[in-house]
Amino acid sequence: MKNAPPLVVVFVTVFIDLLGFGIIIPLLPFYAETFGAHAFTVAMLSTSFSLMQFIFAPIWGRLSDRIGRRPIILFGLLGSCLSYFAFGMATSLTTLFLARIFAGIAGANIPTAQAVVADLTTPENRAKGMGMVGAAFGMGFIFGPAIGGFLSRYGYAMPGFFASALSLANFIAAWFLLPETLKPEHRAIKRVARLDALRAALARPHLPLLLLIGFLVVAAFSGFENTFALFAERQYGFHASTIGYIFAFIGVILVIVQGFLVGKTVKMLGEHHIVPVSLAIVAIGLLMIPGTHSVAALLAANGVLAVGMGFNNPALLALISRYTAAEDQGGILGVTQSLNSLARIVGPMWGGFAFDRFGIASPYWSSAAVMAVACAVAITALWRSRTDATA
Image 1 (tube, rainbow, N blue to C red):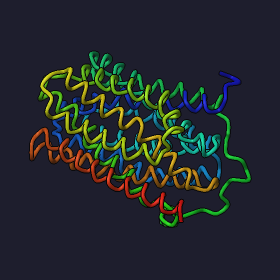
Image 2: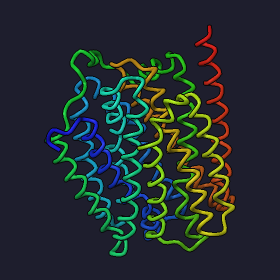
Image 3: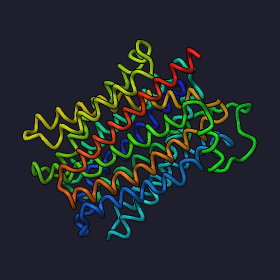
């Protein structure tokens, strides 16, 4: 890989980074339960992670616009290594919370990786590039949960130590292989405050509606993501290893959609058409989950959900990047990630509360309703873009 193209290096870097994240996700609720946690406490674990991403994603994004992408990505990889090690060493809910908080700080550099893609692609090919990063996410969710589920047989600490070792290896490899992609002439000279970056995003055509769509999608999806392990445990008696295989199944579909289908579909239909259709598909998948009574039906519902998310994420990110100036890519994508992190605070809190208070099916019904609202907003954004184009 010494002479590999930068996009390939970014793909591998994101893949290994998300592999470690995928190892942790399916076993986190079960690990927390060993310390006496309930569904809402598990939600608060996710919230603590997301709160740190909300705070630090725009900071890392803006900083990457000033000093370059490479140092921010390297810092995040090293921080992830330390956070996973702390996860494995946790002896109480308090130390588990601290590990997830630090993981949120370190993991807030994903917008920087997305900014690397924006640096290296033209607007016409950006959805394909974002789909490549999305495929790396998907592959992380293919192998990560399966590995985490397998290693959980040897205790919940073992997956954390394994993820820590992976992140360390990723840091070492990126140190030697990851180039700087932000050209000096595109670096931001002035430091932009968080509110100024948000105002800049809101002032750009179409961006406010796109950011709102992203917020609603992530809030709804994170409500599903945070409660699914507990739902499957109560509905089907699944354990961490089984949940890991289901997340791996979702990852396979994400890789197929984002790695092979998004680029061609965007060229045929355009991002503006893909986003609302994909959101409708996600809503259908969410509605299907609580009504399943067999493993086959559960897999089918998750498959529908994965197809919708697989198309939506790169198309939406490509649209956001398309309406952003070259020197603001890191900052605006940082704002996007920050809003997504805020959604990951709201979504899991509601999902955990609804799960405990209104029943195990309620997070999925409510998430489907939110996806329907996001679909309506996306249709509005499409209509406005057509109006602007013909004005």
